[in-house]
Length: 324
Image (cartoon, rainbow, N blue to C red; front, side, top):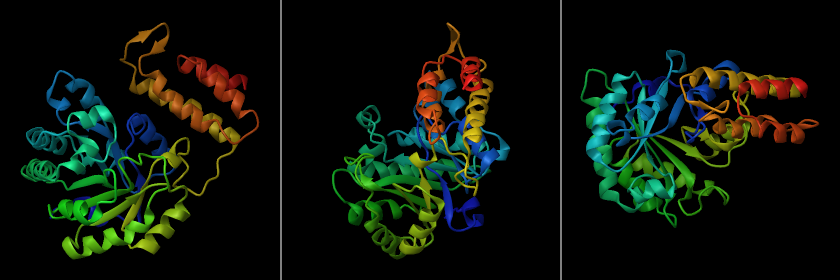
């Protein structure tokens, strides 16, 4: 088993969960400045897309800098052959690891057999892991392979699903403690964490296990690790608008206003070659979720959010923030 950088990480491991439309390089660079997690994940990228007409877009999602390391490329899809080729590509791009998404509930991804749909197809899931391992560890640079999934599709399947994955000699398994059908809405089922750890201890004791779901603070993260025996956790929604999460700093309103502008400026640099129409970047709308998350918790923040939602570019963002 190739553990690579995972062996060197300080315990407990606490990182940001990969989020589509969120975990891009501008987002990661904000955390580099204000508080770095144990490691970074990219947004998930289509394994098939890397070898299609859309490859340039997919490759852009994999852009990263050395200072972001250790960093893992997360892939989704359903074609083992593409996963093998993609793993070789990812290793060549300087990534420290590769993660396979087997938990995304997006219907478009599931229709093609990827994401959470793989929970209903154990054999294909296993084939994909084996193919990814061949690609990730067959070249001059060997990188570890991990899997991120859920506890089941429409019900708790940890007794069948978790062993099936752990049998494939992966370095790390990240478990979102909800089923696919529970999406992100119901309370995460952390009561199953100890059971997952017991299964790991029996089948693949060297594999690390991380948990995911409803974690809001560093203190809560550490307590969950202590109570469950997990090796670490990853945090999703609580991270939005909070690049100070991994530091002890409690941001002031001034800090939040400064971060809004900084994030927008980094976004500009990253998308400088994108098509601009009517003064608006094609991808600028993706920044609105960040503006909404930053502008909260201080007097007048609701009005500020409303103004930021109307902006079309960074120049307008700066004007709104300065006026505020």
